[in-house]
Amino acid sequence: MRKENIPNILTIIRFILIPFIFILVIFHHYLIALIIFTISALTDILDGYIARKYNYITDIGKLIDPLADKLTQISILLALAILNILPLWILIIVLVKEFTMIITASILYSKKDVVVYSKWYGKLATFLFYLAIVVSLIISHFNININFRVDLYLYYLAILSTIFSLVMYAIKFNNKTIIET
Image (tube, rainbow, N blue to C red):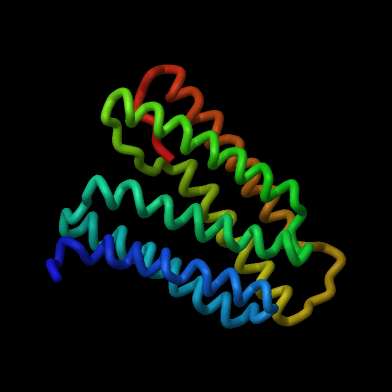
């Protein structure tokens, strides 16, 4: 194994963890799902750190890293929506945004050989969704019955951030610049 491949291997591990997290949430094993989700998030941080620190950044890594983030996020949001922990409309907004981003990025890539990469507003939306998911899993695991659903308000902030990032990407696309997810 070449050292240059370590970040991409860590990203592949995140892909492998997705179905396990989904199944654990569906079967109400929230604490174990949270632990594996945290491991996934840590590998995300680690792969980015290694890639930047040692200049192991690859075009494939720029593509698969955010894809792993999005698939992890969407699979957990889907599981939470199936269990009625998360309103379905939140999942729909995320799916529409991500589908729009994939189509737009694909168009740009096919025309200009453009590599897709993250911007701060996309990372903010991802972070807010991750935080909301963690809070949802904790509330669900400990069966916390509260009138003020902190996780829902975090999802609302994440949705606002998602809409903001979609608008920012649309502006960049309209200006015919590189689109970053």
